[in-house]
Image 1 (cartoon, one colour):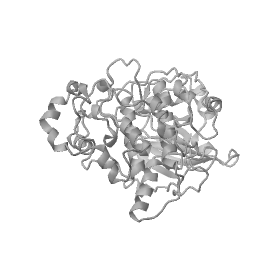
Image 2 (image 1 turned 45 degrees about the vertical axis):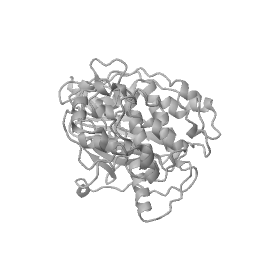
Image 3 (image 1 turned 30 degrees about the horizontal axis):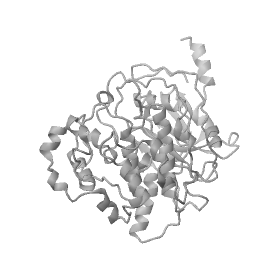
Image 4 (image 1 turned 180 degrees about the vertical axis):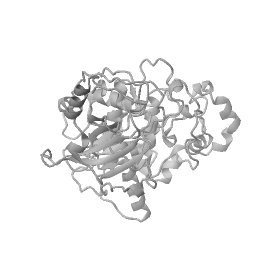
Length: 440
């Protein structure tokens, strides 16, 4: 490359440090890198808007980050985190991603309520808050699924909630580092990524080694999140840590699921015998040990009545057989969302937000920080750095569920206008080495 041209383009390239104030404002730290809360510098800060600046760990760009960037540049929906810009620093070979800043996430919100419950402290939140959170999560996931995208890492820490501002109380699905297209993969997804989804939220078909899993894995994870919102406890909490291995089978996690749901009957899940790990399952587990276990008993302990509409929807989300599990489109039309109080686009619905703002981390906090709890603006959880980059996405508008919205005073044509898609015309080019060459 011509040296003078390289100098010229380097001088013209926008630099994060020239545009944003973020020093000392770290709000997240994990294997993916660092996340900072930033504001545009004084002369550019006309609206006081806050952003999340995510610095990718290491030099160059990982394949998971490449997938995340490729997808987010194409996807546009009110309930999916918005990637504003990508910054490339050629001097230190760093990549920065600029996102909307979300002040809250479900991990912190649930933790706050769990602590309040333990201390018998009442929290003043809208009666429809859980319903509003769930509906917006389903809305965002339906959009992804309608565009042939599996998220594959849904959990409370990856569900962001906007604080005060234009999008107050809006849910944003974040962390697309594990997301994959599933319409026509070159190989079964299980061959590309044998282990996906944080294991408390991992569907039983994944734990049993399914090679051809579907969007039903995201629905199971949403069911786990819904149960956690209702009880403030992870429904399938497993004491043993996740095993970092290519084998998806996890005995203790399956045991926890069976202790809550009961052992699946053959008539309820006919294809269970076809699961690669079915032999291991029959060797390790006895059906008789779980005869008294069912979801009704578990939720009754947490004062959720089995005849309630919320319980019926939870059952549909946590159906063991993935082929019988409800879809996001049908879930959005469930009677639960038709009964009062209706879901709101502002999950706080005008009430004061009781949750504390994110705390800034110091370098000393890095080693202590819970990476699952301190993410903002999405995070890269993927370990598949050697996987091929994501294919370019042709985004299609969501289908039938977008014609039905139970939001208060909300007409569908307004929602569709909000969801009008902006198509990107540029391509992402990556090298196969640890360095990168990109055009954004």
